[in-house]
Length: 244
Ligand SMILES: Nc1ncnc2c1ncn2[C@@H]1O[C@H](COP(=O)(O)OP(=O)(O)OP(=O)(O)O)[C@@H](O)[C@H]1O
Image (tube, rainbow, N blue to C red; front, side, top):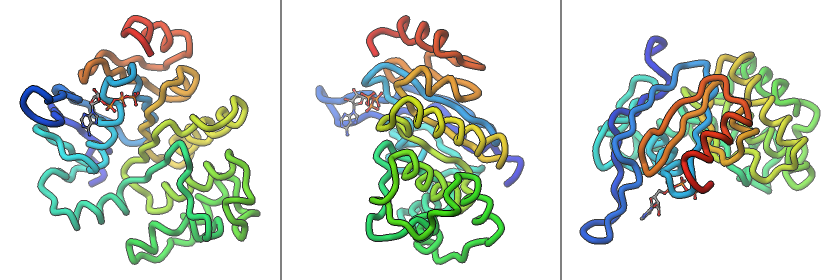
């Protein structure tokens, strides 16, 4: 398992609907995400970013092609197996945090373990809680935290199972510039300090520049890869791809 890539999409095609109304959201996308990397996925509106993330997460089944998570082909799994895999081997971070309002910080962070019927590894849990800087707020409820703090809790929740990959969908979309920077620095630290793997969909060239590399989608196809992205170079690529 350790030798497998964190995530691999091979010739993934996704067609919604059929006949005249059919929409090809992904048109033969092949991507390999190495362990311990931070990758941004960018592209104009409607280019297939959400579909890409949903197929990578096993939330959507590709029309054709293969998705491997940590070496496991997810296409062949039954619904129950897929749900289990999603709970334990993928971490999710959303724009709107999606924390449970009635649970405190510690309960939110450990929720994926409880759902999977697993006990926390105390050392890893401490590393995660301290890594996101929330060790002194464990008894607080989400409503008592700022947006940036809530996103830190969500990142800890995504990490608690030591997933193969953390999938982040516009994780800084609801945050002001300064807080967004802190969250991006944290995601980078999660990769570089904790050896985790992060794939992040974003519209924001500044957010993309926090990643090790940026992938570009256009019309459902891979339209390039930019290593060591800077906001300027990302913006320039996006301008060439059309409206964004
Ligand atoms: N459930 C669906 N049924 C039909 N068409 C869909 C569905 N989901 C997405 N699409 C279409 O697939 C294409 C890609 O959509 P997707 O949401 O993946 O793009 P996106 O890059 O995430 O866009 P945005 O940046 O605006 O969120 C679009 O043309 C969209 O209308």
